[in-house]
Amino acid sequence: MASIKEEEEDDEASTPSSPTTLYKDPDDGRQRFLLELEFVQCLANPTYIHYLAQNRYFEDEAFIGYLKYLQYWQQPEYLKFIMYPHCLFFLELLQNANFRNAMAHPGNKELAHRQQFYFWKNYRSNRLKHIMPRPLPEPVVAPPASAPPQPPVQPVPPAPATTIAVTAPPAPAPSPMQYAIPHGSALAKNDMRSSGVERRKRKKEG
Image 1 (spheres, rainbow, N blue to C red):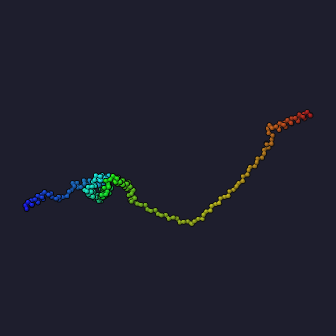
Image 2: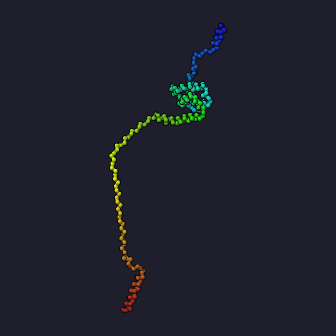
């Protein structure tokens, strides 16, 4: 009996006593807070997620549990420290095993990166559509009261065309100069010769 008691006392002395105080960070958790904040915000980069998948980090159950633990960053008291909110979106997707396996493929990494770019490109315009007040509908203008129909205006008949008779100008009166003896004509020479002959005859007779 004495040997049994001695063995039990030796076993109790060899086993370490259970800790009575919990571990406390020397800087009140400031360093741990900064490290976890930096790691969570790295998840906003699809290329970094692809790197983790390629190096088989997602096959480690301890790492999967660490990703579940990091979900406390979605709480409002921690959310205000996040500068890249896309990291929380990808952190939620990483809780799904299908997404973790898909991010090992380069094509899926490029697809996630492209969709992220389009979200940044169109975020402001899409957000303004929901924030900016919509314009009030324009009042419908009632059509004016229909006036009584006016009688059709009859067209004015065209004036008849008048024909003006054009008379030919009277023929010019003949000039008296047309009947004069032209200069150098033979008739004038004959008259002068006959008058000279008659004069000679008269002298001889006288």
